[in-house]
Length: 305
Image: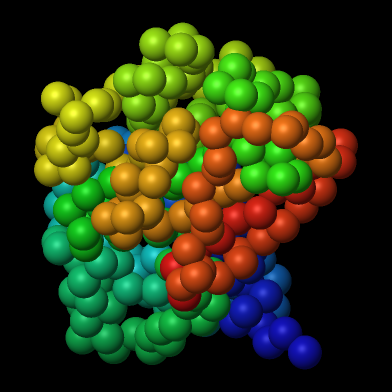
């Protein structure tokens, strides 16, 4: 049976995802305020530079429900901030509102926070519970955490292949994706900051690498070769938190050999060719995160174990 803390934290996660495109470069965060087993306020971080999830949650509380705050619990998917950035500290706002308890999904790994928000709340006498649905809360902002912890973007390797493991037909482009899975690829592009291909793919196929079948901003377009290798430090300096690598095979293989990846997405179609460029092999040290079938094509997503 799911306890109340988990139930309301799942609502926080649901709200947080609404900020997937516009909250960047800030993390996605959701907040829910509960009193007498009833949600009296909720919100999420809508856009960078605007109010955080906690601010929006308190703003949504009706005037007649404000007296309930002294006995209320606020659930937040990410540790409340304790520093002045573009907005004041959310930890200070929570203290000012006088809630009884705070439930936090996971600690913020950003250097300006890292437990300071939780410490400030506890020093003010507020009961704080940390780690409810922690894995899910960390996974939601894995791009943000990787960017700050590793000083590089979160890297997604992505390719489409035939049932017998080829990515083209004797070196010629091959339509492997269906219209629907192509749309999903464009959805992914809208959610990530940059997309990369190798020089050969760029010259042979002239890929647009844009968001045409979805709404959102086009990712930054990057082309690399031996004379122009990828510099992760430069990407980090330019604020790129996530990178899709779409190939071709040699480029993808170079990332695999250097173990420079965080996620792998492979689309496999139920068709075969009798020759061509072999798709990369998914490494052994992976965990299958999800698998789904669309129009006969199977999309499998892997992460590191």
